[in-house]
Length: 227
Length: 207
Image (cartoon, rainbow over all chains, first blue to last red; front, side, top):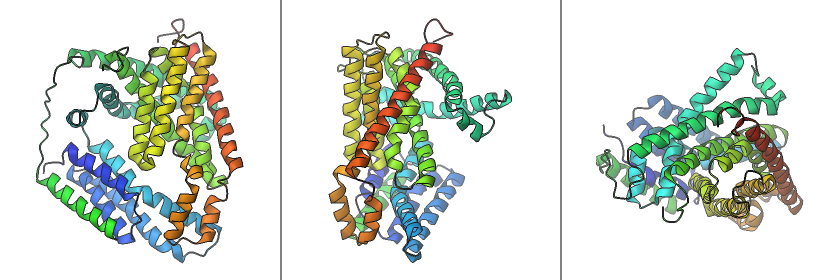
């Protein structure tokens, strides 16, 4: 099945943010979270999709049950936890969807269609491209540290905060400047600094999935306003 | 591109990479603070987040200053961070402080200090200003308290709940928040500066 286009992703971001302005009943919150998880399933990330569905379920159930808890300090704390974080849940799910399903080429194409200036597009696309690298690097650095018997556990890492920060930052930043040089060479070779109109290899077309998503989303938005 | 003629493509790519690192630092800071203060005194989390960001992100900022000593880099980083806050549901209140602080920090660093690596004081000052941008998502707690309380009452929350929620949102804690942020950012700035001059100047290793 064809996955949703980048414009639908933009729509989902707006929808999740608008939802913050409304207080919603529990069933609507559940529906919204399920709907926002849908792109994960469309891109065949079933495991991640199920995980976030489970988290949403915990929050929805928690939100419904928390008022049964006695009205003391812990009750307030739980209420704060469930209703506070629960309210942010749609935004968090959208962030997960954006980071795990968007391809950089598509994002750049979408932003160009919206006439976002070049000095935002280039750093933003680099940023998206760079996140997985940071994660990979961090794991490598931690492995290397453990191999040398440095800060093996989390506790010993916190015991010498400045030393462990130095040990992690220096290779990470060093690699960052290397990657910057590589990316610059690659991007200049592909003509990123050319002032003319850019063509795109990625074809973005509005399909049935997009129309379906937008219609369901608008429906939920309608429920949100009138609920 | 016309707006920032001083920046080349290489600089823009550098800005992107350091923004990613800054963003990660911010995420870690938020996570750590929630974990630590959440256990000790829940509710105070948001007060310590900016300080933690200042503490952790120093090296990243200092290295960006060294790599791109031109006007625009820090502004763009501020705008990008603001955009993230905007998208993650912190509204325009978070976007404007970050963009403005980024711009001011940029002016201090590259217009007043002219990106000179010798001017350590100005660089640290600009980092302090930049860190105050991360106060953005916290500020509405004080300035919009009344509106927020009203909306909570309308939503049927009990007055007790609201009192617990806002018992610590007062003027003293506001000042404390600013002081803590200042200290965190200062320590982060000194640490970052030391790290960068130790490992990333032309004398030491590669850079």
